[in-house]
Length: 332
Image (cartoon, rainbow, N blue to C red; front, side, top):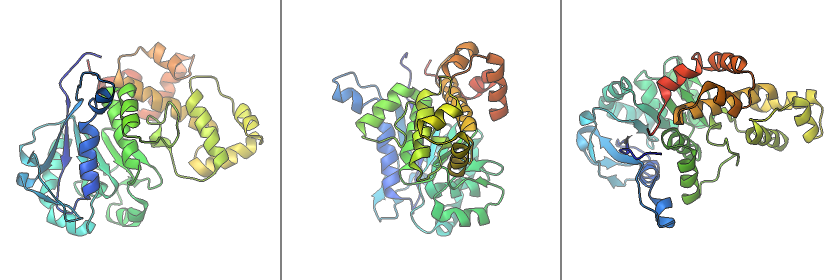
């Protein structure tokens, strides 16, 4: 890929933030294009310029009483590629009230072309600002009831690790933050760089497949090992022809039983999951590089281009070309 200026990432700093997420996000994005290159004695090429922004550029008192220094005043941030909202570590209502002056700045930056991503209870900031109304979101399961009560206009999917609704991303918290970060790094820099980050930071994928970061938005936590095995097979072989009968035979059960168990765990039948994985992969390819629709369809397992295009539009309400024009984050 040709070199370009690093993408601009702003991390929102506020009193009551969870310090580990604030500093962790700063490290993860700051060392993208740096750590891997140092290990292999290659030229360092930072992919992101990362700054913590607070009201007035004031110091930030984290929930663990650590004081962190902001880089800039959020009011002076005119634009960015990515705005990150970390976890609220103190009382949610208290933090939202004390930091209500941040809300207009979230709304202002949301009106630009920036991607916006929250972790865990950080989604409450986005909901309070009205940015999640009518959109899909997730947060930590422990806050789900409060979130639904406070923000009934949001389609909360608390069983999802990560959600994406247009340019707004949410992670459920805990290790899901790393899934979200890797997903965003892949969105901006491609899979190779995302994989480098995962290796240097020793971040273990939940799925271990080539689609692990691309398909994180599909995953719901469950404990059925058989279904997990089928999911992993689909994600490793989505570009090939896959029959439900073959999947059932692979795990020594009938197709009817597989359908029942799979749907109980994922809220989808296997055939729907295959289609969803392929569409998610197509979205990532369209976001990260220039591809023709014909080659894209073949790459994600469809020989019939018109069938693929219909499925894609049904899932995204956009044609593949419209999606690429709207969401491409190519380095070119």
